[in-house]
Amino acid sequence: MTFNCSLWQDNSMSVKRFAFARFSEVTEQCFLLFTLILLMFLASLMGNALIATAIWTNPVLHTPMYFFLANLSLLEIGYTCSVIPKMLQSLVSEARGISREGCATQMFFFAFFGISECCLLAAMAFDRYMAICSPLHYATRMSRGVCVHLAMVSWGVGCMVGLGQTNYIFSLDFCGPCEIDHFFCDLPPILALACGDTSHNEAAVFVAATLCISSPFLLIIASYGRILAAVLSIPSPEGRRKALSTCSSHLLVVTLFYGSASVTYLRPKASHSPGIDKLLALSYTMVTSMLNPIIYSLRNKEVKVALRRTVGKKKVLAHR
Image (cartoon, rainbow, N blue to C red):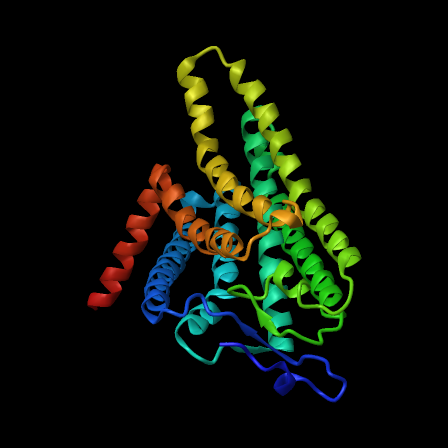
């Protein structure tokens, strides 16, 4: 179905509403994808909510590593909730339109939570660096105040970048077409709808994305470089294994998140494909958010115990 943009333009011919392109003209395929995404969405919400609840309600997990993990779970909840509900509606409904203001709001929250997660993953890597490379000073250097400050900086940077990026994109003119060839209001597909030559805008967005994604990633690489050097200096194989085991979950989450995000935003424009972009979008918005609680709960005994206690308390309350 092709949308008539003239119906969604004001007197200045500026587009006031957009519409998401259909995933497929085959209804069965749309319903299949709807069911799959809905199940993953519910699993992600439940898993991340349980992780955050288990950490906040179990004093034994009130440590810097789990404080950051609880923040990561909250970010994942916000990240998925910013795009998935509208995506689900667009898959099974003819009401696939979204106002310009609604699109801007979705883009802001998506960028806000995404950039905040990049920064928080860097803070988590720094925490692991301090724990392994400076264990005697860890308690003082990673005090509660320092952890709260790092988390606030992560959320603050995400908010500022999200506001700046959204304001920059939606200050452009949109005079048609109005159909977004994507599941949600992401940067590349929205920028492709802007009027005139947008090559300078694309370059600016690319530079901003490079800085926002690469800077935290370089901090993560630097932290793990120092961690690896410290671990290799440990004479005991058991000691090396124990030290690395505290980092394995974080490394896996970083690989999943940065792998899909980097391929999406940092590859050349000529290699962009709407179909591939949609699959990557599903990966970094849905799959990683669903897998994060599984990764941390399966590979961490303390989280497993806390989750059992949390679920047990809920069952007791439910039976009362």
